[in-house]
Amino acid sequence: MTLEEAAWINQANYDIDTAEAMFQSGRYIYTIFMIHLAIT
Image 1 (cartoon, rainbow, N blue to C red):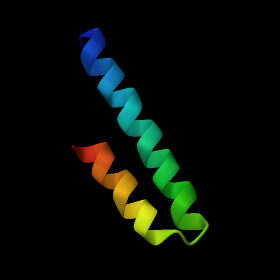
Image 2 (spheres, one colour):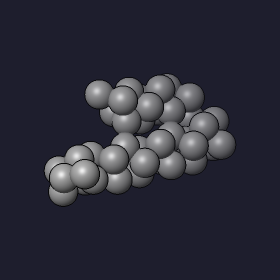
Image 3 (tube, rainbow, N blue to C red):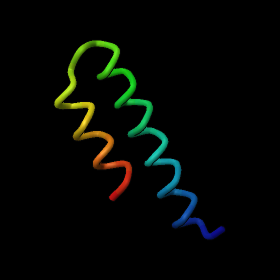
Image 4 (cartoon, rainbow, N blue to C red):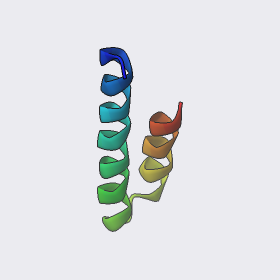
C-alpha cells in the first residue's frame, strides 16, 4: 500500500467515526454528508 492510499484510508475511517458521532447526536443530515465524504 502506498502512503497516498494509506492516507486516504485513514481519512475515510476518520470520516466514518465522525459520521457515527453525528448519528448518535441526531444530526442525520451531517451523518449522510460525512459518509459521502468517506466514500468519494
